[in-house]
Length: 220
Image 1 (tube, one colour):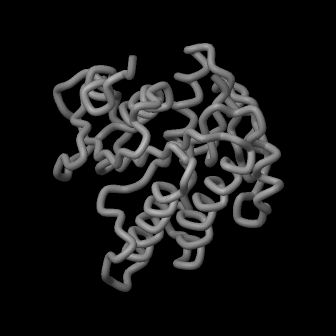
Image 2 (cartoon, rainbow, N blue to C red):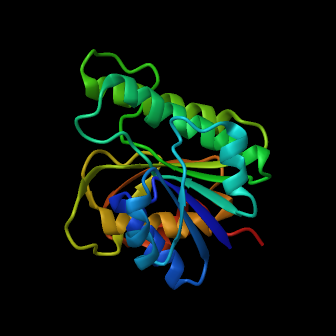
């Protein structure tokens, strides 16, 4: 398969690119800055420079041509403004979904956040973030013709992955290593039966592949 990953220089995305490349998938990583290209190549991905905050649907669709799956792993980042929560965490995810459909890509996996909710209340920057992520999730799940999966990890850590997770529509709060988030995404990318699901992810006791098959059994 060919997989296009938005936010290709992020910590989870770089891990995912390595995993997918090792599985001999073709991987394109969409990044904002040309100086990020080297790290993507080292991870086994083909870098594509495109700013999703300013690109058009047609420009974005052009870089998605030939992809089988699109992954949205971009985020505005810590310290970013309320405005960028909207332009990146919501707007770029929406743009990527519209562009995916225009390019004929049906499968879409979005990395969201536990607690994401378009109707979340509060005025802190993090409250705006949760609303933006919730709005993006709702949009991609609502699009006819888009086979979307929403993954909502718990508190991200840089601990070494264990390969053991709790993956379910509702898990309760808890930490999860970025390694295990990337491993779960790699399985979801290869699991078309996960379309339509919104899943929470924390560390647990079930091997990643088994956890994904439990919530999205392969169709025969």
